Image (cartoon, rainbow, N blue to C red):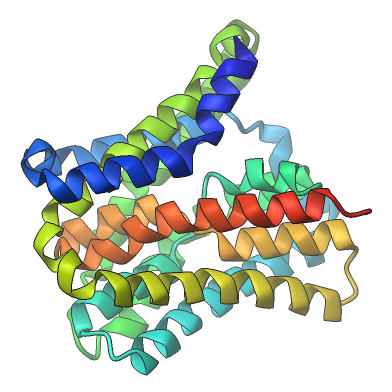
Length: 305
C-alpha cells in the first residue's frame, strides 16, 4: 500500500505535464476553479506540517552556522537570479514579478523527498524548509517589494497576512496535530504526500488554463527562464557550499533547498496580488524543478558519499 502510494507520488512530474497539456488544449475544464488555488495551497501546507516534528526545529540550535548559510543562500541567490534573468531575457514587468515571487519564496515541499533520494542530509533539509517557510512571512513580501516595486505596486502588509493564513497557520496546525496525535495518524500519513501532489497538479492546471492563450506567445521564453533560474540555484547552492567547506551530503542538501522553491505559494500570491500571467513562472517551475531535482537525485545517488 505504502509503496504504491509512494510510486504514485513520485510520478508527480508526469502528472503535471499531462494535466498541463490537457489544460492548455481544453482550458474551459479548469478555468472556473481559480478561487480554489489558495485553499488547495493550504491543504499542501497542512500536509507538510504533518511531516514535521517539534524536534526538527532543534537542529537550528545544534548547527546554527549551517542553517544560517542555507537560509542566506536561499534568500539571496534565487531572488537576485530572478532579477538578472528577467532583465537579460527582456521579460515584461508582470512576468518579472512572477519570476521574482518564485525567487523570494521559501524552500519547496518536495525538496525533502529529493534530498532523501540524493543521499543528502534529510534532517537538515526538513529544518531548512521549516525555517525558510517561517521566515517567508517577512522575507517574501519584503524582498518582493524591494525588487518589484519599481515597476508594480506590491501590497507588502496584505501579502504578509496572506502568507500567514496560507502557510504558517496550516503548517503550524499540521505540526501540532502530528505532535498530539502522531501515533494515531501513522497508518494514514503516507496518503498526505499524494494529496499534496494532487493539489499542486490541480493548481498547475488552473494556472495553465488561465494562461492558455499567452502560453502560445510567451511559453518558450518563460520555460527557458525558469530552467535557468532553477539550474543556477542548484549550481550556486552546491558550489558555494563546497567553497565553504561543507561535506558532500550537506552540499547536496543546500543545493536542493536553494534550487527547489515553494512555487505553489508563488502561484497563489501572483494570482491574488498581480495577474494570472504573473503566476505562469510559478506553474512552470512546479513542473520543472521536480524533473531536474529527480534527475540530479538519480545522479548523486549513484555516486559514493
